[in-house]
Image (cartoon, rainbow, N blue to C red):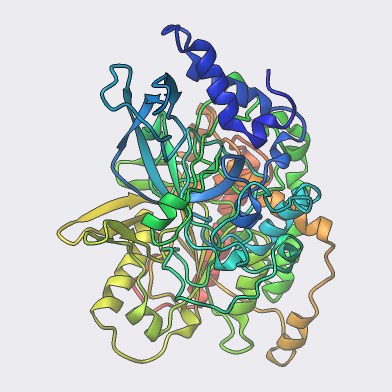
Length: 592
């Protein structure tokens, strides 16, 4: 049994030892035993925080072939590749032959006997992964502080001298990784925005900038961090483009590969990791959320968390009402929007989406910007998109396939599940949309209506389903479709709005963290409607919207089944909203 920390510092040694012990026994299933060993090791106390994260630690501080973790999004995927899973080497002087394991490596050892009958060719899948787009600063800060006692002790490797040792983390070019499986974890994080928290682990840089930074193909502009090739050895058909992953694997940094890839390091990840405590979840699966505040167990095991949702909902309602100029109805619908998610699809119809158009936003005071900043502090991932004429005509919202470079060029709509996309329609201006602008507006409309983005593959389009929470702020009714429009009804005199917005009630960091936990937990709860309630609601008019609102109201109170109280409250809210809509006669033909 490997000693403490050996499985982190030298995971390939552990794998090679198991391979050597069982190479003469074809029925030993040593590969499964190796994966099982690492799965159990990661269940040990503090094991996950002991492993350095590529999201936090600069690459030149990490020892090659050590175990690392990386929280990421699959931006692109390539065709499967073949590699030598087992091969034989011959010593040039003694002619002795030794059987080697090629799994979890990018580069085989020298002296390979290519004519050996013992060579075994295997297959693996490669994903190109980037940090989760739009991941907010508070997620990075909390995740960093969860492991800072470990990571501040990380020292530069004394056994490896990288080609460019003295560059900062932000200057690191794309990395490649190689992993066997992936496992979602909520306590890892990405520090790619030059945060001051990272400075204590960064090496000083005294070299002037040399070349133009490589295009790492991040979906959102201005994002920083590592990009990696993640190589998966088993069950790769379970993963797809835009999945969020937590990867544990062996870091492969090869100078030979760096020279072949324009001096880009390459990282190989063996994921022996599966940290879920139940046997059913000891499999690789996508990361369902990236909120580091959620309880470690399943939601069903945290009844105390559920019972506190109702109390937290009332507190959050008061918090939002103040910022929404005293409009409690708009605050109710904003909460429902933030906990909404696509929970199923029936044919082409996404069930559970709840795009909100908050109209009547004050034209001055940078109100939409302030509203986004408020939401940004509460959700794990978000993106602000001003719908100016220049943005619509120049931005690439839809990813496009580049066949020459054989890669998928990212677009601003290539986002992870449950990202909050804030569309600021108050930035609209007079002018003419060109062809690109029309395509972009059409793409936004399709995203809102069908929760899908049609990627451009030149000769055809390919539908990619998504699950993005879209909030549209506008002065009048939005030009885009929506599931629900709520005209903002200010209770504050115009002359006092600036003072009101500048005097938000003091909220402690602990309270803010409760809001963050509440929004994520309410979204993840299971929900059902009993047969009795189905009979009670089936005769109501406008059943679909009422069911969506009632579902979200139930979840916001921590209830996993529809009750009569939630149904009547949903009808009451919709009555109030429709009454307000009648007072704000609309000239658009959008959905009321």
